Length: 128
Image 1 (tube, helix red, strand yellow):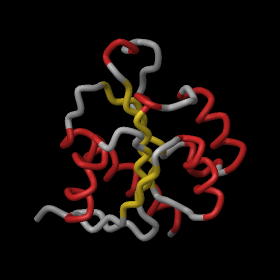
Image 2 (image 1 turned 90 degrees about the horizontal axis):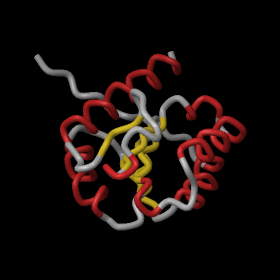
Image 3 (image 1 turned 180 degrees about the vertical axis):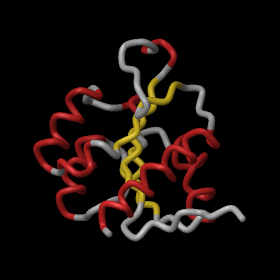
Image 4 (image 1 turned 90 degrees about the vertical axis):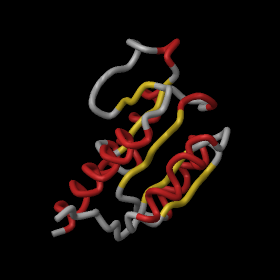
């Protein structure tokens, strides 16, 4: 039996162009996630101070901030969330930032959803 994670606090998609939202919002909601979207990383940093999310997914294509800058701000504002922020970057930036929390474009929706699910499970276990 496949168990789909159900998020208590949700997923924040940071997506200036709408492509991330169109690819992920529906499939995430079908898996029981509550999804909120914002257009900029600056807006997202303000939003996470008001509402707790299980996972933040940030498309860096239109971001005014780098991964390092976003991570630094999250560590300062919401340290528990800094380890549950997934970044999507364009192929021309491949190699600049790597790691388990970075996905390369073109977007593999299944891979991103799998990572979101795992990060959400980490959040759930932290709440127990």
